[in-house]
Length: 196
Image (cartoon, rainbow, N blue to C red; front, side, top):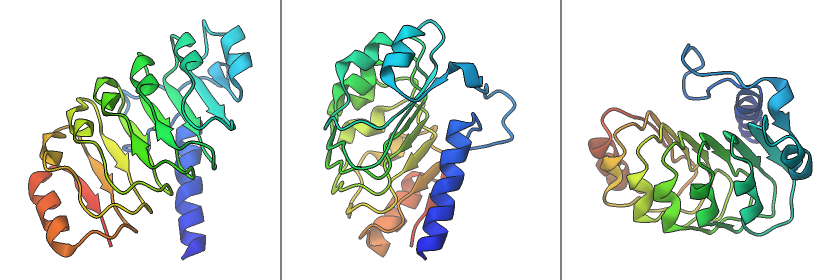
């Protein structure tokens, strides 16, 4: 099972980092970010803020620093492995952000201001410590892919059906009952629900 999880995670990271859309890799409208616009640390990205569109960080901050809003063209933020505890309102202040991957952290809370991340399409929160989601996550107008794999969530917000653009919801490895899965499926008939 661990081999499968690693392979699935590695495939997702490859797709996100190299510009493929993990939701629908055949989507011709999805732009590929050129390598020259991808950065692995904030300082380099800030020096090149006029072209920086993708940032992969290995940071020890417990929340997303406000300095990330200084990158006006940032479309993709990958912040993985162990430091983040909280998804703050800063995520909604990065105006062009489309992809955010916060896998393998220690996130246990998400700001209600996430509703203002108007362009965010892909949100990966797998392998964290979430027990619930704010109701406001259901107000995200562009969200297509929501990965909640391997958290501790037992119930999704009542208004989950408001996510009309959602294509894929991954809720595997969470203590979600069969009745809750049926409720989610009924509210999201247009989405593919991945569950145990």
